[in-house]
Each structure stands twice: as C-alpha cells, then as structure tokens.
Amino acid sequence: MQSAASKRYHGPDEDNPWFTRFRYMPAPGLGYERGIVRRDPSCIIQVDGLYYVWYTRGAHPCPPVGHERATDALPAMPWDLTDVWFATSADGHTWQEQGPAVERGPAGSYDERSVFTPDVLAHDGRYYLVYQVTAAPTWRCTPESIAIAWSDSPSGPWTKSPAPVVEPDPSGEVDERAHPLDATVKGTFDSLRVHDPALLYRNGQYWLYFKGEGIGHSNMHSMWGVAIADNPCGPYTKSPFNPITNSGHEVMVWNYSGGVGALLTRCGPEKNTIQFAQDGINFEPKATIIAPPQATGATRVEDADNAEPLSGLRWGLSHVATYSAHNVVQGHDPLGLLANDEPWDFIVRWESSHHRGGYA
Ligand code: AAL
View 1 (cartoon, rainbow, N blue to C red):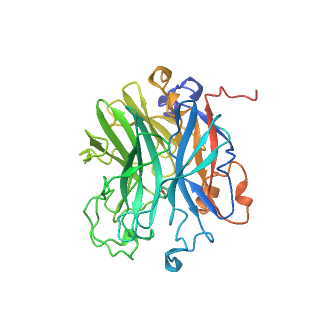
View 2: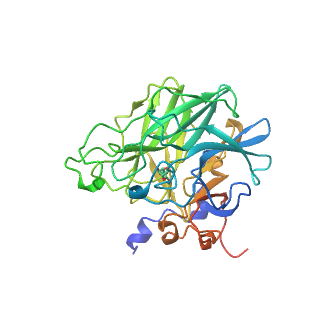
View 3: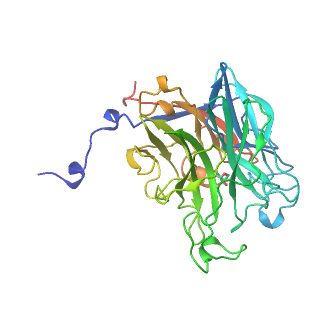
C-alpha cells in the first residue's frame, strides 16, 4: 500500500543538490538609513580583489507618497526618482558607497524619471549594466522598459544605449489610469512592463532574462521571458517560447553546466522554487525553498569554481522592502528591522548553506 504523497516522494531535501537554506545578516554601508532608499541590488562581481555591486538609490525628502501626490521632488514609490549607484567591498560584508554609475536622463529622455533595478555582466574585459527605465512615475498602467550601459571599467564612466533595448509587447488595450485588470483588450504577459533584467553570456550570445507585467494580468502573478542578442547592446529578440516561467517575481539566474539555474520567488504556483533549464528556456522545478532572498543578486563565480548546481547562489545581497506589507506577510523581515519608524528600503547580505537539519 502506498499513499499519494509517498508515490510522488523524491527523497529528503538534504539529498537534493538543488536544495538550500538562507540566513541573513546586515550589510554595513548599505543598511537602513532615514532619507535614503537602497534596493534591488545587482549580482556581485569581483575585479582585482574587490567586490562590486550596483543598486537602486534615491535620496528622498519623505517616504513614498503614491502617484496622486507625486511631484518632481516627491516619489510615488520607493523606486521612483532614483539612480543606479555602486558600492565596493573588500570582504563582501562591509560596503563603501562609491557614487552614481548611471543617472536619470535630461527632461524629454526615455529615462528622465527613474533608472533602477540593475544587473551587471562582465565579459571580455567589458562591463554591461542592464536596468529599468521610465519617463513617468510608476502608476497602474504606465509602461516601463529595459536599457543598457557599458564601460571598460567597473567604476565607469558608463555609456548609455540611445534607446531602451527591450520594450513591452505592443498588445492589449487599457487606459493608463485604469487598473491593469480592467483592460479593454487583454495583452501578453509582458504587454505593460518589462522589469528586473538579468544578463547572461551563453553559447556566444547574450541572454537577457526579464520579468513581464501584462495588460489584463495581475502583477502579483508575474512570469519571466528572455530576449537574445548576438551583440551585448542589441538588437534583442524575444524568444517565441516566452513566457518561459509560470511564476517568479524579481529575476535571479546563473550559468551552470551549460544551462541556467533560476530562483523564483513571491508570485505564481511555482513561487519559492529553484529551477533549471539545460537549454535556458525549458525550466523544471528542482527544489522548493523557504524564505528566499528578495530581489537578489548573488556573487558571480568563475567557471573553475562553478562545479555545483548552487555554486552561483552561495552568497549575495537582497533588499528588505519596508514599504510593502507583503514582506511582513511572507515573513521576510529577517532582521526585525520593520520596527523602524519610517519605511526606507535597505540592503542585507545572505548566505546559503546545504544544512543537514537537526539542532546542531
Ligand atoms: C521590484 C522589481 C522592479 C519593480 C520594482 C522595482 O522589486 O520587480 O524594480 O519595478 O519592484
């Protein structure tokens, strides 16, 4: 006799090389600070012995006021009126903020309102930053795109692409001031916004993974797509297989064994899973995890150090989104810092370990 649960049992987490647990600790230099938003850190790269990270940073006169009250100086959301900054660290624990890497463009440009949520790729001696851009404060149905900047040094200066490199799919119809679910015509999963870019180099091409939000779709059931280019600065062509996940919010992907590992959090039936696609497209869940880092960037590893499925997920930085109550609901207040009297998002460090269980 065998129960349904016993029949589908694949063995304990401890025997699964894709399973891990996360623990959290402060990241001095990038921690809670009144008046400053720090969130959505990139992956971390090491150059000449120094760790580098990029992130969304805003110096705001007050916490977010929402779209109706937002002005040229008052932010609608934590990621409104922000720039991409970078910080360095000798030990990966204590960080020194270095200043802006990519800033908002002048009035009339595609990135005049905010540049945010970066990721980095170091390849062939060059550095590429991919990030979100918007010309207007985020509200119900305002569009958002992805742009790229490049440099010969991780410290910049950075050259911006003349236009965004990935745009929302031009399907669906909705009033900009309506709720996305009140679409007159439903669009594809990425017809409203493309978000959370993550850039990998694989098989001679540049794979730009992103999260889509769609007209007629709830942004709390987000999915991911990928766009591929022969040249890092584009043009990028969206895969005909998109969406390539049915779940997941902020994108975290890493190269492993010729394929791509992925950490899916927060949204959809396969939230809080680690997945793998040998071809970078057809993802399969490999492990269910608890309390994963939010909006995270992990430390990129050299090929020689990338022998295990989770070599690309050893330690990194993530954010605590104090502004959103869902962090409390989902138990993501590992440091108890939501007790702070004002919501200013900040960055923490995490480490993962394949713990064997028990009380040791
Ligand atoms: C995030 C990301 C994107 C969204 C906002 C800032 O965590 O999904 O970056 O636009 O929230």
